Length: 115
Length: 109
Image 1 (cartoon, rainbow over the protein chains, first blue to last red):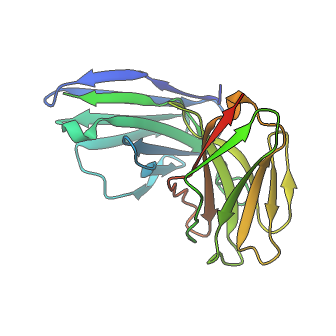
Image 2: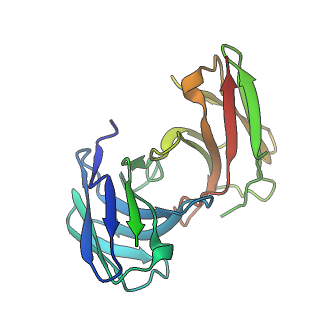
């Protein structure tokens, strides 16, 4: 247990569906992240939130819409996805500032399959 | 942020030390070396990080060469549960974790 939880763990959706991924951290961190890991590829950073403000959008298509209502919760809203969006979606959190900024704690991920 | 080079795969016998190398010849003075690992189908896990001194924690030791152009992660007594992909990441002012392909470590009985 890393203190970062993600739900659901597995999700199958059609291309016309709308679904949301949820991430919650119980570590008192103020930065949260979404990563995508496709088969046989390295993790790719998608979004960064710092104190609830989005500080990074790594050229992610608009069919992925993040939301960070507070420092403990992060959502990824999905709509009209493509089969190539099938991947493991990982959430992480960390402190910000000097020293431990890059010690990120990852959740177990949501395995998404788009049919 | 500096790029890193790691061997794609390594084997290690259970109970022996696993030494995972990483080259980062373009590292600059304010960039840290971080190590993460990812066990199959799980999220990555932070292991250790350092700037120029050697570091040790309950999981591993990190040896950084004096010129800082390479480093070695040491798992002193590898177990089957240490089988994972190990990522060496150099982080500077951007603060971003940029994951490469890493080294797949297979610990064998």
